[in-house]
Image (tube, rainbow, N blue to C red; front, side):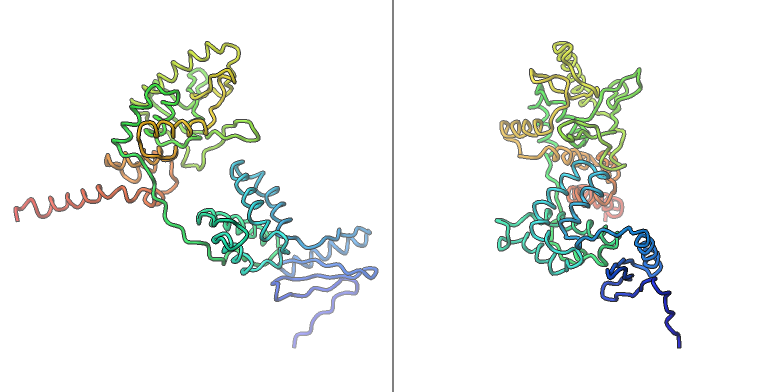
Length: 398
């Protein structure tokens, strides 16, 4: 029979806590009880040795209460999200944590957070019987749960907890998103009515090239001397290299959404014409502004007014103008992002493949294109069936 080896006097004790699925090391010095925890016995032994060495040098560990959900999430946002994620992502995470997760779960001890706690929280978000006046949209709830789940996964990696209660919670069912788009006829009518508008080229690039609003507003004129820029009208090439974002009140050019978002596109002639008109207008605006022109990026789309010329354009101005134009001309109400979807639907109507659409829009996976625009391929599928009919049955006259 194996006998338990006695630890040397003064070296403390190590026990396995089955309920927490972790090891606890403990030592008593001058009547005070000190503990360390670890996922493995070897790591616990190492931490206990460091603790004892510190105590022998009269360095006492700072005592603190257990982490609450609020204290952990606050530190997680500060140390894990803000330095390593896009500013917009951080703002979204911080808003959801502050507005929803902390008011409901913040006072709970992190180690005591249970599956039922998180499930009740999710249920409250789905109904009007909880602390909220109206239920949140299912996709918003899914996103809030995903944020909590990601944070708790990091808590596991930091050995603060042993399991993730958010991982087993049932989120609300969401419907697959079906993109809204202008038909080719509506798109042609839209481009006719925006001709001459101050944002004509923005709308034209979005609908004919499928760029996101941040990608459109971040476009820079190509400088042949510096060999830098995104829009080369002579070669008819447009490069998507950046997105325009606003961080702490200042505009910045950020990296594309994904690696696949960085792409090189051939510019349709109609877009080249609109961009040449934009270039001529901007040249005139720059001359009028003189020394007050403040464009530091060389952007295609800039402001021109008594409030400042040559600055990046605020995306909200563009979306507001879009809604005015649609309403005034009796066109379907769509978002700016739906102009990008319109690009995809027009390509599909013209016989483009899934791969063509993926490359044009900069999606990361063909599956995403299929899920978003698959319903618009119905005519193409029917034409494929008709081709098979002609090849196998109609040719022999039977």
